[in-house]
Amino acid sequence: MTDLLKGNIVIIGSGLIGRSWAMVFASGGFTVTLYDIVKEQVAAALEDIRKQMEELKKSGMLRGTLSVDEQMSLISGCSDLKTALEDAIYIQECVPESLELKRKIFADIDLHINDTAIISSSTSCLSPTKMFNGLKHVKNCIVAHPVNPPYYVPLVELVPHPETQPATVERTYDLMKKIGQSPVKLLKETDGFVLNRLQYAVVSEAWRLVQDGVISPRDVDLVMSEGLGMRYAFLGPLETAHLNADGFQSYCERYGEGIKRVLTTFGPVPEFSGEVAQKIDAALWDNKSSKNDQLATRREWRNLCLSRLAKLKSEIKYNN
Ligand SMILES: NC(=O)c1ccc[n+]([C@@H]2O[C@H](COP(=O)([O-])OP(=O)(O)OC[C@H]3O[C@@H](n4cnc5c(N)ncnc54)[C@H](O)[C@@H]3O)[C@@H](O)[C@H]2O)c1
Ligand SMILES: *[C@@H]1O[C@H](CO)[C@@H](O)[C@H](O)[C@H]1NC(C)=O
Ligand SMILES: *[C@@H]1O[C@H](CO)[C@@H](O)[C@H](O)[C@H]1NC(C)=O
Image 1 (cartoon, protein in one colour):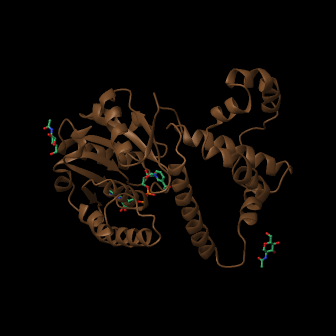
Image 2 (cartoon, helix red, strand yellow; image 1 turned 90 degrees about the vertical axis):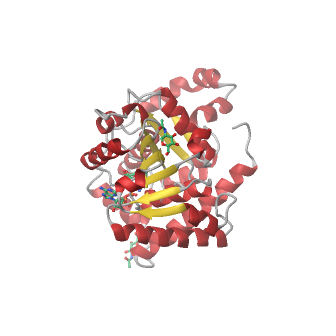
Image 3 (tube, helix red, strand yellow; image 1 turned 120 degrees about the vertical axis):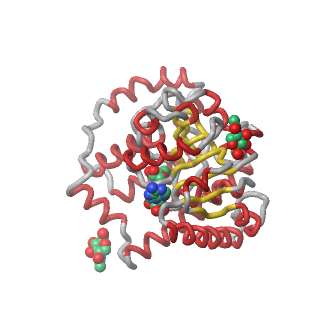
């Protein structure tokens, strides 16, 4: 692991996710080079990062042991790819979600790195096979999919290409732990990875319940935030079941038939358009202030909740 402590972390793309990664790496004491094809974007990103860090500091939520100035001094901007990649040990790609664009960028990066640097993509749903096929350094390529906002939500899904070396997975895993994220390893790729597959299962059943007139949009959200979600912040669905009976086997014996009966009543894949979409959308605006104000206020509140939750979780950590 110590091998990744010497040399630069390079962030490719200084948008929403690139900025967050830069902050997370700097909070862990790593030097970071932030690259973007749009020169002005890099300057804007650095300014925004400082502003975000100062606000975090004020509210006592700045991560790591370094001060804002110390963390900022670890991050530098760059608008030349070749220069950015000098001394690169780990490259986190964060450009827009387009297979063509990402393939082009990986082909460029491939030319300028040595055999130990790791190329990692932040993609939410593109296939590692399609992104990394044919690269000289394919053994060093991996997906490290963060959750928005990564500063508050630590999960990172690691998804290998079929030719990714096990050592690449392990080194990336260790690096993520080192900066305070919570990595999980997918043993092979699957469409949507794991987080979105679980998320889509939930959102589609929420849709169907609203569509079938069983419950209102606001109430179905309460079922999660006041019910299931209370446990899910600490326990996954499998251990939840395990504790709800005398172990998971016993859960299956007790509840398996009932679960199967209910599951056979699930409807088809929703269209995600039309009347139901309108109904849910209308219900989620509070229409007291402008839509932009509502989104900003609600997101700020969400971030506050997530940071408090992160603090709580670190205080009552049990076993992992
Ligand atoms: N936003 C999310 O919630 C979220 C969550 C997890 C993963 N991701 C993934 O992260 C990636 C980035 O998403 P984002 O929301 O930060 O996008 P964004 O649009 O905010 O930022 C993209 C940045 O890439 C830059 N860029 C474009 N072409 C480039 C090039 N050729 N070289 C270098 N930089 C280039 C743009 O100037 C911009 O600054 C996507 O793959 C996305 O799927 C996003
Ligand atoms: C690759 O580059 C990094 C950063 O400069 C360096 O630490 C590492 O030793 C290099 N590895 C090889 C095999 O040249
Ligand atoms: C506000 O929202 C409610 C419920 O969604 C709706 O009935 C009402 O017409 C809306 N009011 C305004 C001023 O848009």
